[in-house]
Image 1 (spheres, helix red, strand yellow):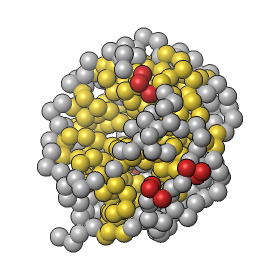
Image 2 (cartoon, rainbow, N blue to C red):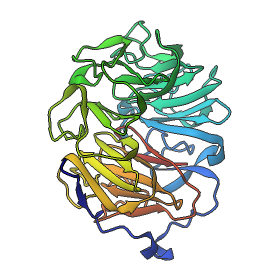
Image 3 (cartoon, rainbow, N blue to C red):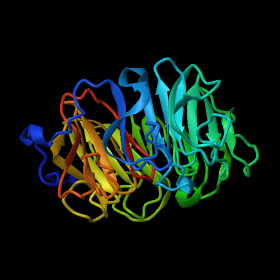
Length: 391
């Protein structure tokens, strides 16, 4: 088997070479969840609707409070629905940002620029924000809220009105993780099977056709899945034997199978061995390998893969220079990563300050949003927008 192409990260990353003068002043032992970039709908959660060029605190939420944070929606306009949900370690959920489709789950369709508790939710173990809806796991069951226009809530109910509070998804139990995409939903059960529902375009449900479904359906012949990662309209799954499967839209190479064709069934991402973790950005995929290096594939028109080109990649490119990735996320045109030294770096487009480096200049290589020692271990972004989060 031909190995994946190995290239140095654009402008070969060397954190040791970064001078103190280049690092944002707000880093260090600060305890807060931080956010930056577009903020027209209050999606940064800092009580304002002003854009942020550097990471600013999210109101009232410390990193130690948060188990998981997920960004949803797209760009700055209200119709793009940028928002975020945060699962706290006490099992409650907070939400903020745009709310046109009830995706904040607070019983209204009014936007809010600061985190507020989703009423009635407790004992939650996982959350995920999609383009215009959100999912949560409680006691192995899935709850959903927001838009149901493409049956992405899986409730079997009306598709014309938003659901402004969490309601149960049909049929599923013993669920351990969920992923919300652009108008569809994914659930990973404890038995290693994957179930999908919602919009079926581009084969994103993985069930062998492009049919939209309001009831969860099992992805056929897919077993022993350990984790899933959901992009806007593609899905990645990591199996127990280290194989990465993908399905859905493939036009930008996001399936990683040396093709630009959609697939309504799982296909193998090519040339990947010894995969430890997987991540899906809006239209790209990344895998952390056992040796600590990072491989990326898919959309790259804004250099969001960090391989030194702006060419889409239909098979994985291994970025040898980038080690120690703990978490990675990306919107439509940029990528951010949390490294094991506590730093947050980014690459790709930056016109909306989505890299958090204090500028709106698109860099030739990687930038630093937070320096080593900041205490950050995870990053998130809005689904197809230009806002970032670190916690």
